[in-house]
Length: 577
Image 1 (cartoon, rainbow, N blue to C red):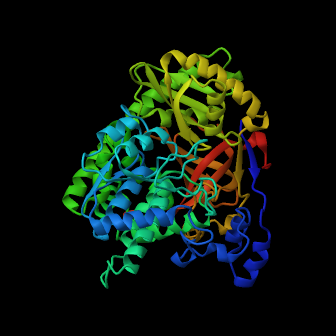
Image 2: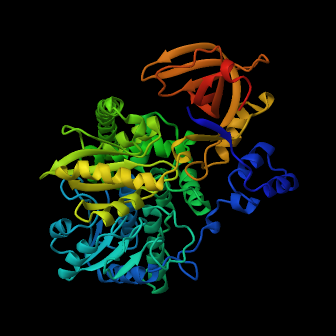
Image 3: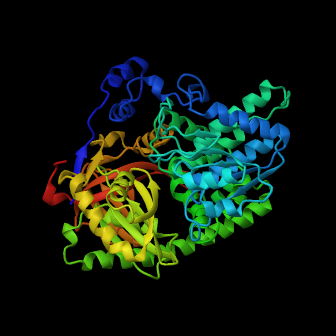
């Protein structure tokens, strides 16, 4: 059973300032627990964005912008190499659209086939680039593509790498590298997404073309790109530090005002979401999975076409296709996740495995990351799921727990057994690798050895942090509206989660393992509640709950709903937290 703990107040000084500026006391408490020290950190207007250039700018941004500005003026052929996830798709679409707005006409884009070439700018992908390519620009990839960049240079191509992943021991020999995580980069926001880096590059190119007089009075503004930046940033689950919150908030404002690009407007319509109701959660759990479905099951080119489409009829058709692909993805994932759980449950020493590794020869390589995530959630262990990708190779996708940097654990494996991993990369929380089928058992043993050195007993005990109790009288629709407006919430700036004790008055099972409940607080107040993806509920009638107050919008009306994050028996635990 997970431990429930109230978040400590990391910045209590905001509480004093809250009284001075009449900040809502509930919000002040939430901000204090999220290290917000002054109200200035709550300003999310564009003017608060960190500049891309200057003493604390992105290393390499100036050189990359000069090369691309020259390419636009000279109408040289630029090929953007993207990635097959939502961050990569939005970054590809953003840079393509931005350069087009600046006057570029010789633009191409390619996305690697995850089933044939894997991730990033590989030599195999370089061989497939259009024959007339003169400049290659990577987005959301490339920082570890040493061989791929070398292959491109052997073709006499200029190469610009834009990425946000961790670099390896050797950087690629590109003409310019823009990555906040590269050595020596002073940019303070290391958690920037791939699409955010692409946005900074696009803005720098525009500035140079303005300075050169190439763009005149009718120079394009990039406001129409905010929805792409917000979607890719949330989809990649990067930490919502102040700079990222600004980027996301600007995109949300555009979406809520009904000015979404045709493709995203069509996706919202498919999902039955009104523009005014869009939140960061909508981006992460409604739009991103539909975009990602293209890269998981078919070709991310479909998702990029949707993002670039300016024709509503075409966008609607593409959105329906993506929506259907996402339905297929959910069905495949449900089967694979059930099989993965059976594999783990059947292990004789399941409880002693620090890391979980599952494989079936019939599994789909595009869905293994989701399966790994489900295992991580269920067992609170780092997990990898593997699927075949041809020629005797397996692709692995992993998800980690707090306390383990997943990509670094793979680097440790590679250092100890150089023959083991064909390639690997990723972040602290998620990573991928490729190895030969014959090496799987050796990898599992070595990885668990590495984990035994890196993980502690405390790391393996799941802790769920919440924001404490709320006065029942303050729990109303207006509070839910204020919480929604105080976002965006997400990774690194977690959504408000409160503790309470309730009596279950009514419960009704819904399809998909969901529950609709009516709760009583013991003082006569009743609340509607929803519990997602829960096969069963505590017997009750009293339960302790961790919940999110939210606005339930339906048919033009709004009402308070408690979204239940976790439940446990209230009789056994009494009124303790």
